[in-house]
Image (cartoon, rainbow, N blue to C red; front, side):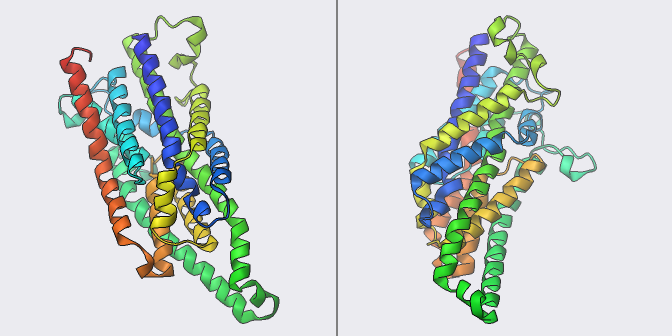
Amino acid sequence: MLTLVLVVVLAALVFEFINGFHDTANSIATVVATKVLSPWQAVMLAAVMNLVGALMGTAVAKTIASGLVNTDVVEVTSQVILCALAGGIVWNLITWWKGLPSSSSHALIGGLCGAALAAAHGNFDALVWSQTVGDWTKNKGLLWKVILPMVTSPLAGFLLGILVMLLLWAAISAMARAGGLLARLARPHAVNRFFGKVQILSAAYMGYAHGQNDAQKTMGIIALTLFGAQTTGALDGLPHWLGFMHPASSDPKGIAGWIVVTCAVVMALGTAAGGWRIIKTLGHKMVRLHPINGFAAETSSATILTLAAHYGMPVSTTHSISTAIMGVGFAKNPRALKLTVVERIIWAWILTIPAAGGVAYGLFALLERLGWA
């Protein structure tokens, strides 16, 4: 049993690594497309900021660990977690190979839901659908923490992208009308040069927000695994050198420090590995970007992700940056958006949770049939 727990923790870290290179594009596609940074410089910036962001808070991790699966109905065993991770990994690799910026967050959530349903033999009570506590920011369940943000965050990204772009243009127009030095600073060449510099800051902000939101999902999975292993007695025989894995050594809030640091480092390494197929789709195929457009998209998306992480919502980095880019492109010229690419991305979004969930459900059913679960 202990060996299985260690395998699950390793699989979780593999998922975190894949998440890093799969979602690297979310952090750096715009800054590469606008040629503000080279691909290698952008990847290094994203890796460092992913690391910093991942160390800042655990609200999303707690949602994954305790807010989605009803442990009174289904036992969250190592096999359940392993199948959940496998579902997320398989879907991530498929969409990466196809160059589609799908959501690693939703792939993991879909895998967790599918594996839990399989373990409960189709009993939908195994999932926490909605728990209200009066203050909506503390509500739990798929409705509040997954479904509602899944709808609102892309819409918010699109609208905020348009708004930020319009505000920047209004400011530039006002400077042009003012005359003198301000008018010279409002010329296209000067604007591109200025935003070519400040876009480095917005790209760093985006990398920070990505790490703060995405890295925490795997933290929650590992914490959930160890809690389940503790319940079944799988950790009773832990050797002394692995004593840090015992939940009793975790901090009172439920996510041990070693889990936070390990996931942060692994995601940073995955980010450093790059994800060039998706970078090409987001940065070049959807709409042509200039530095001011990249700044607007990154700032809009990172703001949404930071707010979501504060409230423990596992929001998709992919959804927020993709729709922010769409919003910026729409503000620039509604006809500039390449709708065939947008359509492929939306289909990947729609299919992610059921596809990853289906893979996880099938794998757990297979393990049961073989007597391994």
